[in-house]
Image 1 (tube, rainbow, N blue to C red):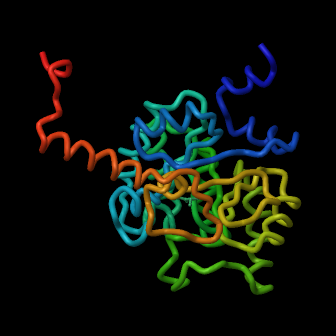
Image 2 (cartoon, rainbow, N blue to C red):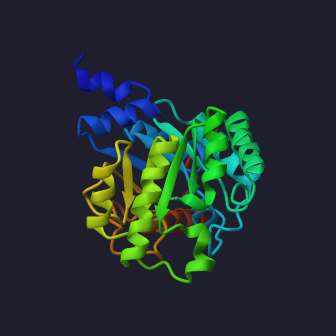
Length: 273
Ligand code: KIV
């Protein structure tokens, strides 16, 4: 068995992600929210599965990520864990479960770890939520940071435009990233920021930096599965590459099934008992 084949089967851990950065191997990360998708995503060789609060948009049909609850995130995470063997599973702490009170933040993270058996949590923000991140880290729960466009703060930003184009915001983002590494986060997601800034951050920290709309100079990439498979067709930002058009494939297959039921050609004798 070649080293590569062994690596393709070895369980991904937070430590392995750091090793991947050290040897220049890019990290692949994708969202999943349910058992069947997680099985496919994991089987295809994704390194990190994110049970993202984007479930609020693509699973529940909400306009923002704000409405999803801790109970709902735990439900999704439990289902994903059942379908995952190799990938590291990271779960978003939802809006309102960690921002203002570090004890509540720890209680939320503990619930995710105990009830879903997931392996890490992700939290949006820098210095503002330092105390919450530190308390969670102290309990031995790995934390992935998330800087740049942080969708849970959409009502503060007012738009989903590219972040940190201005010098002051870029400087804060860099100092937040260094702080996240110093306090012990194992990785950082950078969302929708200029590629040069993202590259600079990835060069300044030793932990992996995973980008979404942050260019190719970072240590890995993450996308929302429903967007890259073309299930969610109403969202086409410049950073999104569509790898399939599943909405059309599903629409046509279901239309075909409707025709067969209406015409009586389904089920056939072979499909009957
Ligand atoms: O919730 C999510 O899917 C995310 C990714 C966009 C990084 O946080």
